[in-house]
Length: 251
Image (tube, rainbow, N blue to C red; front, top):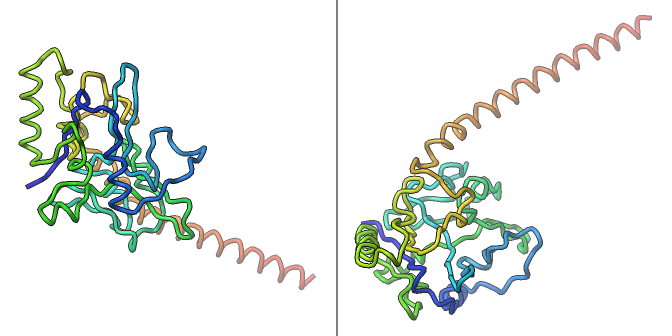
């Protein structure tokens, strides 16, 4: 059954324990900020971040692990894949470094590892090895206030709606990630609008692969067609040049 993470913004105290344990678990270095990086704390060496908003609101940002991920659909070599447990995994051995996944992700999550001689994409993997071993992700285990918890996706959604119903004035009546773009495996409860976590505040409920897959299927045809066109133009130009050369020699 699909697993998920539920983050309750009202419980987060901004302690950054989730950030620290993520780095320690995967041996991630403390990177040097780049001017071209998004100002959200994420990078190839930061797979989770905590954003601070007015009113001492702390919002954890990480890969949303979409149920129908656009990044998986646009990857031309299958370097990304969705697991039955919920995590979207990445295989650097297959990666071409094309960065299509960066362009396709509506949450702007995948980051390029610019510091490496052969750079690849890096992102949160939801501690998939731990999940496969019957454990919870390092970040949820480390949270001192249980602001971010781990469990079955359906059970976490039920828990989120229960909290909204029991304290209706405390939360916005919405579970972020329940339906957006087909749903995600990282869910949020909040008392402020979280539209800023995505490129567009209102993504809709239609899975993005429904839009990206037709375009990606057309790529091989486009390459073949363009190759044929360029070959044809080259043949015509060379033929004209040969004729011109013969004509000049005859003269």
